[in-house]
Image (tube, rainbow, N blue to C red; front, side):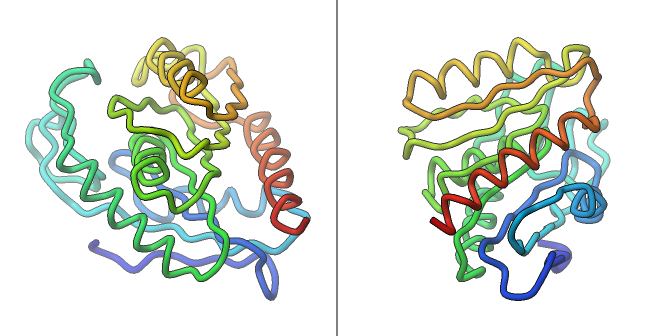
Length: 207
């Protein structure tokens, strides 16, 4: 990857790590500010990697930070399986480097890669999947997933996220599903709901 991940620890001796992936065109700094908005009960190491710069078809072939290529506004078309796999392998390796219980989180493209890394490489059972979708289903390792999505999202349609949610349910995953009156973004209530869910996972680690 093009840059070393940004690492933020909320306190000494973290009990878990959370690898958090940004969306298309952003970088590892994008979700760093969210750490201060998450009132967590135990110290956590947050790891924010940056996707490589690569040509993106939807962007007229111009290069930008991307976890994989997107060829069409219809996200179900021409899925870049090779790019998803490459990024998921990188995330799995990064997760294994933490030497701590790991959770994965991601927004949009990053959420898709986080789900694939968890499902394919089984580096965690806990995933925060925000404003995302997942077209490459593999047998689940009984994930626990928080999914949040905007009802006004015109980038990743709500229907795609609902399809992902339903398939995860069918595969035996424990899915907490929340929708918010927002576009392709994150809102304060969603952050509060994420904090609640993360604290539940941390309690399980401590228990």
